[in-house]
Length: 360
Image (cartoon, rainbow, N blue to C red):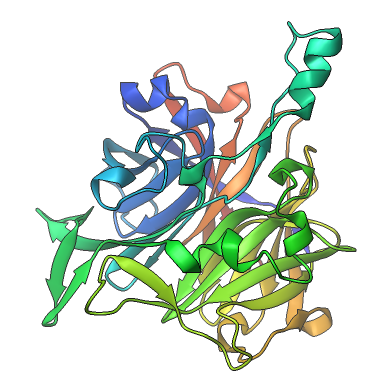
């Protein structure tokens, strides 16, 4: 294992609307797509697209801007009554002609703020609530518009019509996990209290992997594997193909030394795993490599030679929490931070992200 080596930094420029919504300081998901960078914050129901705006080496972009914002509610029917209600998008993936987004599926506990005292503060700490829009897995078709990858409601590719689709109804993940012997008991618990909290997604061919920040059980972190599909009669609805045991999800448990999963990213047949505390702590934060993850054909106990600790990341006290990573070329990853340290916020409105060299 090595300590992180910052190869260079990248400036991310956001629109005034995104800055007003605090998207730029609540970054939770990221995925590179050629000269485009898909990015999401955890306080909105949108996905942002930034474009490389520097004119240097295209393999080493140093600035992204020219933001375009896309409301998820413009493409699929979200479960919340208000399409702009926070979706808490915690993971993005790009595979073939689709962009995938997953919400945290978590409950949240009210926070005690500086102005709250005594019984009022305790009452707030006892309040647990959920938001319907957090319970989403969305697949958006991507097409080329004036040379730029752009989400659309519908596209025809290779003679096949693809529509934007969402996982709902009887395949809703919280509903599916109610009777799960490991995860079911944690559904009523808020995410930041070691309850269910999805914070990463990776897609490889027909496989969708969801990384759980929580729960972590006796030091073991969970990855759920799904096989979504659509039918001709309901092309806007994702369904889940059952595995040999009859379940529509498969569980893998990873030895991450007690940490939960903050993001997932494919690298060949491996998965890179960004790991951090499941509770409200600053660190440690690490990148692991799950070897041959995309080849596994059964539920896995991922330990020993199956997983390696690749890199130790730095973090701040109350800030600079690594939340998203994406592969940049074959030997680097781009990492973005939630609650970025003041030094990452420039006077001209940009946010600084890090490009890290992967160990050889």
